[in-house]
Length: 118
Image (tube, rainbow, N blue to C red):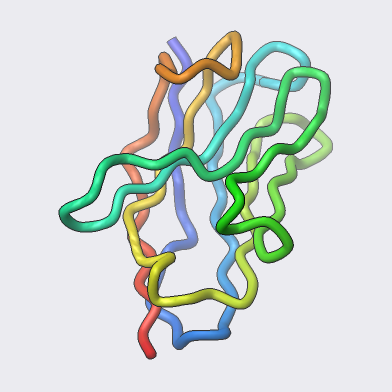
């Protein structure tokens, strides 16, 4: 059982930046696909980014060039650096972990709210 705890959400103006953090209960480097999903009010949950088991980073098209996924050296904290934020980025952001980068993830954090105002 992997436990995930997100932090770093908040309210910013359009064009601003936030960095989300996700602390895992165990080292994930090389063991889990780590990802970020988000859910905006009234919308389906949406995949945002993955850090694969072999270290590759993947992004949905709407955040490419603005968001960066990374991890700490210990392999227990996952980050999502979000720059040039837009109002449409407003959502609850969830950290996930799974043995593979499949559609349905096994482990989810509790979520952190990101609100971007105009």
